[in-house]
Image 1: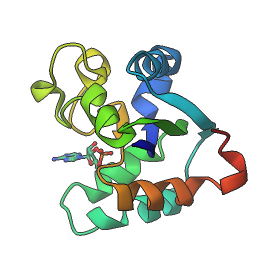
Image 2: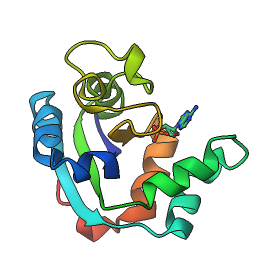
Image 3: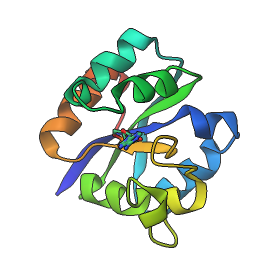
Image 4: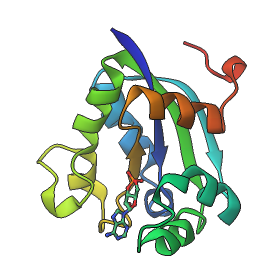
Length: 139
Ligand code: CMP
């Protein structure tokens, strides 16, 4: 089925000016960018977005790095978009990411892993709604 998923190009990637290269890989994977905005999130916004991880030992580091520079928040649309995006992103830890994936090509470490993508339909809906109103999504 055609789905929507949420994607984020993280500060480690915007800093290296590879947002276009990453977006090209998403498009080559068959996904369409139906909403996109560059945003420098506040600590509070990062804490809210990643609230599910607030008890994790890496939460402070995660919030720090996500608010350290601009990100590009996007909505991707396509056939099986959630799984397709996770496939093209590659494993969370770049050491485990397969050849040809975004994280294999660009990620620096597990914390600075260049992209985020929703992991399930419920989280995709929540994460899209966190950053976009329905009128900003043009499919
Ligand atoms: P992401 O898909 O954005 O979801 C949560 C993020 O937490 C994850 O990608 C990683 O960047 C980060 N993360 C997960 N595990 C660790 C860890 N052990 N140390 C630092 N950051 C982590």
